[in-house]
Length: 87
Image (cartoon, rainbow, N blue to C red; front, side, top):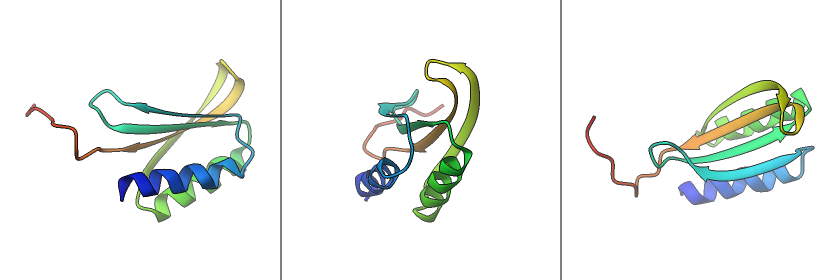
């Protein structure tokens, strides 16, 4: 289920005007998708799509990033297969 949602977001975003896409493991083993785009409307489309799938989404505008001024969109998903220690 988790994997299917992530694949769905990637397939949707590839059709949009994105400059960069990356998937990585976050600090506590959560899976994170990062999209970079220069267009605000693309941010809104990806956020809306992710929220419809029940995924949490955050974005920021970076003025002097590696790809120039751009929006960074992060979708984080807690991976239930990762064992977590009590805090």
